[in-house]
Image 1 (tube, one colour):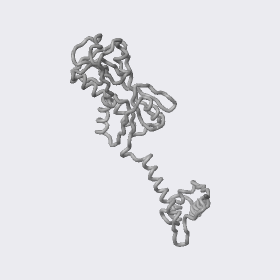
Image 2 (tube, rainbow, N blue to C red; image 1 turned 180 degrees about the vertical axis):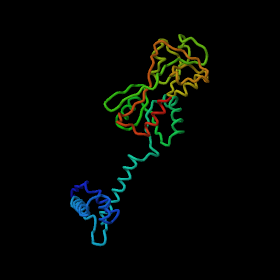
Image 3 (cartoon, rainbow, N blue to C red; image 1 turned 135 degrees about the horizontal axis):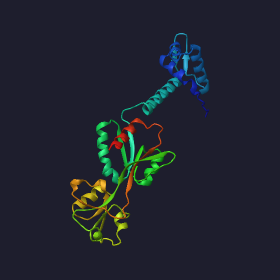
Image 4 (cartoon, rainbow, N blue to C red; image 1 turned 30 degrees about the vertical axis):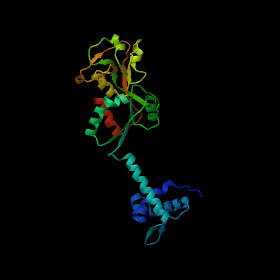
Length: 271
């Protein structure tokens, strides 16, 4: 197979001439001499080893290869417009921890959808996968409990996340082992804070379901305080040994953050 060495310097002259099918009009638009336009196209043809334009004193016609090249260049220009200049229907790719999506981020999505035309693509993942996919450019933003700082990623602290023990009725936290434990995973805070284990546990990786079960009096749980709304009428208890965490927004280190992503970030910063 013959190697093609396309000389990209002369593509503009070819594109303008092909659209006008007129060398003099192309020369006017490019602000160069007509002979220079003809020369550039000739050099382009030599670089690909194919005739692209048939010239005569009265007419300019594209060859089949010339038309095929023009079609591809038009498609390429269209994609460039989509990438750099289209302001409608941009998609923001968000990675987030499950608990944050179910509670805090729901309200963010509602506010964003009311005031913006852009789309959100939101995916729940583990902390390790969120970091990996952000570094690989698969996410535009991620929301986690970790402050990530690297050569290509930086994080912004959004708010503190305080953990509290919750129950439907008054209780003594020291008697936590006497209640059913509703936990997010086998790494739940209840396991770390209590030497005495409950005889019954329910494991469910949904913060909203955990809250519903506690409200129905099924058991007790430890959850972020920002997930507990006043209308839930739950009892909350601060426990020693429960350290505050932080929620962070992490993104690639854009020199200038793309406008559609900045619109979402600005909404979050105002909350």
